[in-house]
Length: 432
Ligand SMILES: [Ca+2]
Image (cartoon, rainbow, N blue to C red; front, side, top):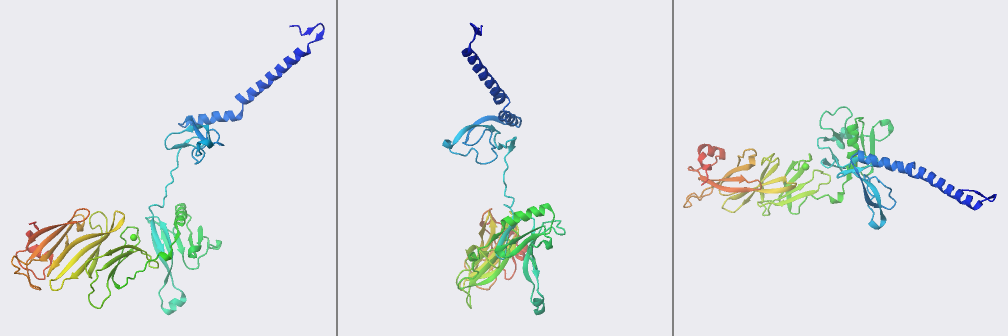
């Protein structure tokens, strides 16, 4: 093509060529930098390969408007906006239970409350949790003045020890004598707890102990003393106290048995209440009204039914004028996550024998007792005389007792025990 026409420069044509050349140059430059070399694009390719190499696949999802492609799906929130506030972005789908952390597919961290199965301890006006294989001991201090007056040492703190192999400084303390968090005391960890005006500290440099220290501190709570329960009952007096850890949290509950507060035998039935072990602020946990008006003793059995549960036997008796008395056996226990009363045997009459605990793999699975037998024509209807005995067997069915009437002794008995009678007449246990 002749660029020069009639000796004159074709400026218009040159201008078009120049403009086209510029456009081409700009486009080439843009293509090189933006399509093939642009860092953002390179990065996206890299993320895609990281996703695929760690087992994920590229997908799209609606995520919040300001979210870029491949958001960190291990964090909560990036894709949690409403549809109108979301836009479609590329995501790395790592599959069930996994998430993309920006680098690779990882398993989602499940946050487990490690203190969930710890024991709870109540002391003074606080409660806290500690590992179930650790132990809590009270620490005491006696001032010289108390010593001079012969007063006993006072409980001023607690020491919490690992279950086994605790050595040197490997324990955690609450309170104590002249404690502070001053650096001169060289505690590895120390915290002032204002709610109890006391210090929680440890001198251990064992990392496990230090971790437990932090976890324990996070469970520390102030007990609202306005929720403390009175251990008094109007018109009643405490007849017996049993201290026993029924629910297995390594802290004893206080079981109080009340009878009517009268000079002679009361008429009102006994009351049984369970309180939490914190004697400064007891909390009522369970309440039960018995049948008899007198308590004839208590007894504690461990693994009574072979299922690990403890049982506190309560024997209450009611008198029925001239026709003898009735004994009611009840068992206080903690089963299936709650305090319960299990109704046991009941024996009545002028003379009864209670009880022989005779179960296998749990003494309470079979209970043997006997009642005064009146005879066919009331020939043994008398108070205080000897008589044959009607044997009765109570069998545990996993939830309660079923009653089986067994045999009647051939001989009359006076003060003999169940064992003595059974030795002479073992056949009396055969069901009738
Ligand atoms: Ca307990």
